[in-house]
Image (cartoon, rainbow, N blue to C red; front, side):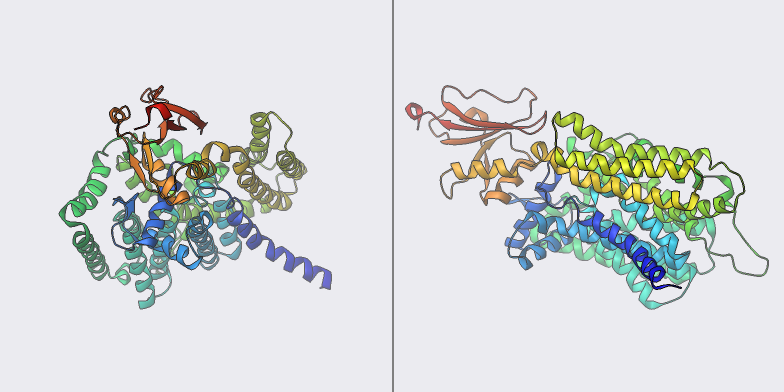
Length: 543
């Protein structure tokens, strides 16, 4: 083999990891986007300043989740010299990248190296993973722990009996418990139970379920005792009952994200875009037939394992009254392990066919990828209504990828068309990450305006505000270091009213006009449902 061929092979082997690194790092240079990111970043900042078991937001108890995620981000803040947007985002990015690396290793061991890389590239370019993997959220770290636990289960059932694997399994579940509560261990437990009951693996006793449940029970007890010792009975009740039982059955208030039972029926197809055709192919009845040879133990199919695990986890998520798109993150790696293996088998089968046509399903995939690549830059051009160099460059790249994919498909060059499909998906995902700050920073990032308001206020004074919610209670402490003090509207006309006042108007008819007691200094809108207004008491009416 010539030196040029060897160099080409080595460069080709580097492209998949470079693509994953590119998709992980792009889009990290933006601010904190409402509504979730400011809250998680500020809770972590307060955890770094005053470590404890119970998280706080604006100095008040915020015990929706256990402390491990906030401890992790707080540790990053301390290691990097203080709270920062990039430090807060680094935990989600690192957890997402580690999940992709684990999926590559898992698919390579369970099926083939091509299947591992294909599963990871499909997951990395899917819509929900792309968005949530770059968001300052708890769920990416939870996803890493549940994926590691699911991998340890598969290794124990299919390959080897190792005590180290059991330590990894139950250690990951304990971490998941301390990250987001019982949902992590329960999701994996539901998936494993479904797989064991349906596929009846011969080595299920390797899991040591009694010992594992004892370890998890001890972890729950330790967490409960730690919460009780710091916050008392009220904190323990809020964590155990309100944020577990009530959120499962009847979420309190608007923050509960109550959704209908079939919510994930239309959310999941959107979450895995642009990879709907592989899902349709994987659901064919022929793929569900088990290969068994008389006298030999039943072979373990990793794709079947991923399918059954993700189906049981999705069913459990659907039972809960509280539903969000980000809750799908622990399901997605197992789902794409299944889709990656089946897609590779689908593509290999096509290479053996003598038919000239490439198939309707593949053409559907091509159309989806072309729309996926071109949709964002075209939409950005229409949205901005002006020439923008970033948008124009993204449009050229998307058009080149789409044209190449269409040409190779029409010419029947199946191997190259498959590579072009992955390139198109990665390019489309990169375009989304590059253009998202250009399009959304103005309406999603309140940071620059909050800093400006902080510079107008007297030094060391708190921020007196009306219309305070979790977002406002997080933005000002994180960016300015000032606590937010909620002011009742009825006290704004009294002699003790504050000189400076920040009003959040959610355009729901609740905001009031403070004239003539106050003069409006400045205002800024952040989307259709959020505005910030800075008021100052009139000199003649000053207290």
